[in-house]
Length: 147
Image (cartoon, rainbow, N blue to C red):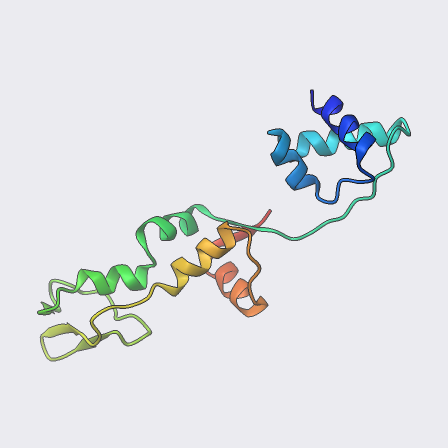
């Protein structure tokens, strides 16, 4: 099926510009399409060149952040607007200083926060490119990995 679709497409088009998109349009795994193209190239039925690109996927931890929010935001949301005792909430404050420590009370310093980590992970999940510094930070936190 994929072979017929591939050869049929190439009869009316000069090339397949993106094998990932083409595989998705056929509903087949990219690796299966890639193997088919390599096989057809071996028989000199098609001409193909390999183009590699880095793509990032979320780790299991990264996926959980998309669903539940980053630990920093989870921590912020765990503090009720009226505050909570340190004994009841003994974790360290988020680096963004959204939380303040008094003698025995932990309070919110802002009314709401934006979960930038969650937003960045969603962008990666949608295939968007990000700045190298951001990518390196997400890799360091083991939230993304190369595919």
